[in-house]
Length: 294
Picture (tube, one colour):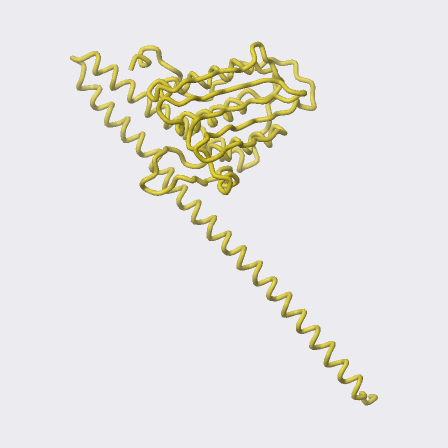
């Protein structure tokens, strides 16, 4: 074995030192990545834990109310007006529970990858009117002004049920967050082969820093035991996912104290669609005329 010169020995030491330094740098980078992943996993677990706790309340509270009110209903047979008022309250709680459950079912379908588009020629104004009807009681309670500005006769090839879910969730948010006496505006039109549906409200708006978070599944900006608004943080994430599933986008224009305007843009499907959609109605509870008096 030949003997290394001093220069060769120094070069060998330098190379090994450089190798070790690079390895240490790589190790630190990997460690940082692992720490970041761990933080994200912990945050994800916290969010899901909060979601499970919240959804328990969102299901238990209406169920408890329905059971309690049903008991009262059996005891008020001598007072027809009280019976109708109690029945209206049961309806409101049942509708809210049904709405929450439909979102949970759709979230599970999206998570499992089972959701697929079912295209048909959709009467868009009819879908929007149906969605507005579902919230007519809450709209009346809050004395909201509703402006339905959907283009008359607008027929567009898309998935009626998924559009209904998106619009219903956007309306639910608009109605919930608008102040009493506020305004909710719905527009729909075809622009350059795209279906544009917008839902605007006069609520508190959303800060720029929170705009991405509202589309995260299980995420709510209003959390804790003192939160003012119902919901479990699935609605907007479902809207976002369904818009993507249909090849479209869902955008938000909002500033604090200036309200929100969500804009859904959907393209025409690549395949030709000749079938006309049936009137979509995913919700078990439709508007009851007798109950609407209260």
